Amino acid sequence: MQIGLIGAGNMAGALARGWGEPVLATDGGSGRAAKLVAELGGEALGSNAELAERADLVVLGCKPYQLEQIAAETQAAKRVLSILGGTGHEQLRAAYPDAEVYLTIPNTPVEVRRGVIVCAEETPLADDVRELLERVGRVVVLPERLAAVASSTAGVGPAYMALVAEAMVDAAVKKGLKAPEATELVIELMAGSAELLRHLDGDTLRMRREVTSPGGSTARGLAALENAGLRNAFMDAIEAVFG
Image (cartoon, rainbow, N blue to C red; front, side, top):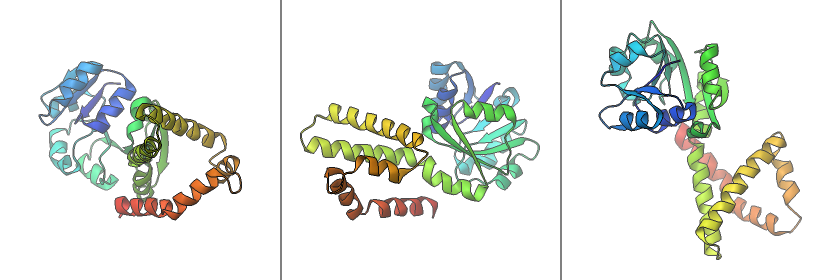
């Protein structure tokens, strides 16, 4: 399948690197398309219209406000996969009335094939498109109204995890660990904890109980996080994104 990227920014680039195949790409003059194809192979094109003619699947990685302008240039597209935030399926179908469209919200770990790709059930995936997405992560199909909520969790979540990791590293460094040592410890504990939580079928309470002794150091640490408002902080974050 020949993939064409309109926009070669962070999210489009992450998908392309996860797929690991040559792509057609355009950009708005940033030079990112040329850098991406130099890395992966393919062609950086000067025309969105040419990309739409040549690609089997057009991936919209432009800015959401550019949709109408880009759509006017790419009506030849047969299939369009949108990764545009804040763009509904009705808006997408209106922009591409003659194309098969797919509304998706991926997150950046698709670059290492461990992403989450939320797809709106209102734009059902063709089998080969689903297979393409499953190569870079877990596909979750939800009604569009819930896909937006999922985006405010999984879509922005990598930045939250990075902030948590940074805070843990800073705390460890304050107590005497060197930054590279603390960083390695935190990366491995996050990766291992995710695997263990999956093994436990998402049972967070069991996972906490298995490492927490009554009155012990873990219990004191958890109490400190609760008292500092960790849960409320995440609630506030989802409200800020989704609201």
